[in-house]
Amino acid sequence: MKGFERKNQLFSLCGLNCGLCPMFLGKHCGGCGNGNQSCGIAKCSLEHGKIEYCYECESYPCEKYRYIDKYDSFITHKRQKADLKMIQDIGVEQYNLQQREKMQILSHLLANYNDGRRKNFFCVAVNLLELSELQEAMKQIQQNDELSVLSVKEQCSYIVDILQKIADRRNIELKLVKK
Image (cartoon, rainbow, N blue to C red; front, top):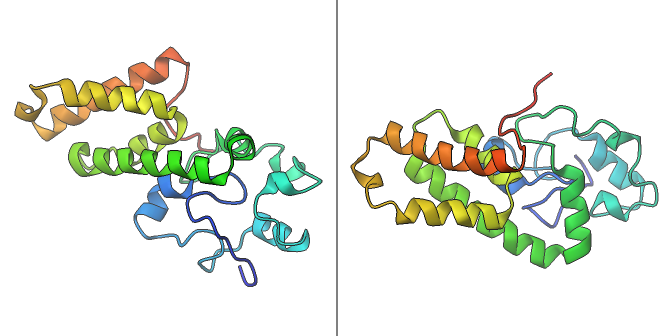
């Protein structure tokens, strides 16, 4: 979007975690402000004094957020409002530290346990689960000495099962909500 610039490349002004997005990871999206995508929220930011995050606007939450988490695009929107609240509460730097750790976990999962069909699942899981839960999952994975003798498909299934069990404890559905 012309005239829009975003400083934080890990987190968008609307509350999406770009660093955990399959489109961004696959270099198919430059993120808002770094590509040719037309974004109504970026346009709104420009109209409201170039605010960096929507929660800084006096109108937040506005009509644009009324149904924002009802459907997903290529990244989950389920935590958008909660993540905006978190960044507001703990600050950009602390939030980015957590996001970087989540990105490392996602990178490890994709590099070592993706059977070619789980990229979106891993992206959604890392987005929706808390960092402490992901650390718990990684500990379980690292402690399994028998994992290396399994096929890639079996390893992937084992990892998916761990993440799904953690999600089930909190009634979190690890899939995108499509229209």
